[in-house]
Image (tube, rainbow, N blue to C red; front, side, top):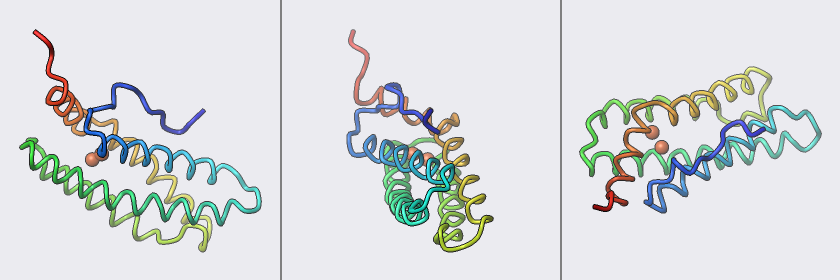
Length: 139
Ligand SMILES: [Fe+2]
Ligand SMILES: [Fe+2]
């Protein structure tokens, strides 16, 4: 079973934004698989998937911060702060394949943090707001 599964309810209709979330899900699942697997070659794969996850996270938090500010989403500031902390922590891990086990453990922690952040009320409230904005209920 995948670490984190995409659900239709996560779609907001903002295509680029939804695509970023989907990419993050895909990469998080691949990292999770790499961490599970001890097969040769997985170190190299982990390193490249981690690089892509870090890059996508950088892009995504910028997009989401801007979208939240644009839509005057109430807790935008604290959400931005959570993004900053997450990104700093992720950057501090650097390349998880180079170092020892503790890097892998920290990476696993970050995957759970990512999942928690995405599923938490603040992010989900914003997704609902975008959905309403893009698909207003027909009357
Ligand atoms: Fe997000
Ligand atoms: Fe977020």
